[in-house]
Length: 110
Ligand code: SF4
Image (cartoon, rainbow, N blue to C red; front, side):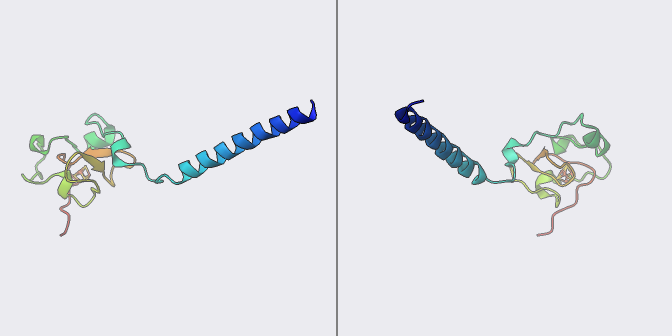
């Protein structure tokens, strides 16, 4: 390798290293918590969902303790937006429907 080739090779390496550092900085700047939109939705067929009689649409709930008006959106275990899907403490890593409901519903205190 000639002197000129060595310099070129080093330049390419430095460019690559700078690019990698920039990419790493970009990644580390992203929020650590997965956004609710990215979480997989809880399926009614999920064993935990079945055990808790979770339904995507609260109006279809058949459990005795269901009270009309109760939804995930007004449950204390829900931490998402009033519409769409959001995280529930009882389904870590997944999102429940804001319009959903399950037998563990506990009304959020204002
Ligand atoms: Fe919805 Fe609350 Fe049941 Fe979670 S615990 S699924 S937020 S009703």
